[in-house]
Image 1 (tube, rainbow, N blue to C red):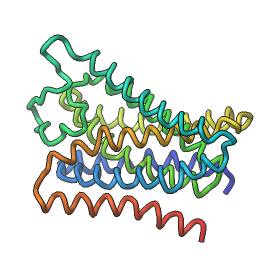
Image 2 (image 1 turned 180 degrees about the vertical axis):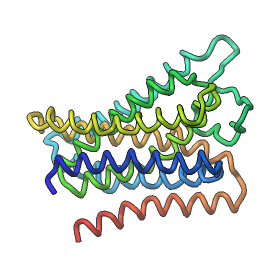
Image 3 (image 1 turned 30 degrees about the vertical axis):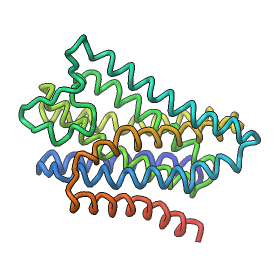
Length: 265
């Protein structure tokens, strides 16, 4: 299978998998699964960054200092972007981003997803753009090697599942019906394919930029893991929950390692 087909396949499967799991949780209300998915996603993303993405970026670049600068710049960039989003929704002492509201679902269980105060329309726009960018990252990774592409896709899919579940719940809270929320979720998931296809044709003539795109992808995953997901895990302080979180994080890292061994072996 050539590179282009790998990109289409990975983006399509990722979107289908996240939509399927969101649908299962929506129909069976197994909300306790979200925290488990988040722990696994942390391990998969950090594993992909430090075991695969950054090593490949350093091998390909002719300017390691610039590559590491882009990682640092990317982390700061994502901090500023998220801060702007918070300012957009905060007014004086009243900040809807940090409110915990009640409704059909108990959003105290999802506060670590940090999205509960965004409006449904904001969620739609943000999710479409986010998934489009994910497609670009997957495509750029596959253009280096199949193994890097698969590992990157696994890490992104692992992160997308809990995020899409959180977005679905927010849409319900914003007044959308389950059917409408699921249709949007499906549409947003497959915007990843569009990003992947466009990136393939654009980056084919700009291969010198790929190491820097990989560095930006790494910074994105580091920021999401450290700033967004891990703080939510700290809300559960019981020894049993902590041990389970550590095990799931290690399983996320192991999934990347096993994938590398299977592809390269």
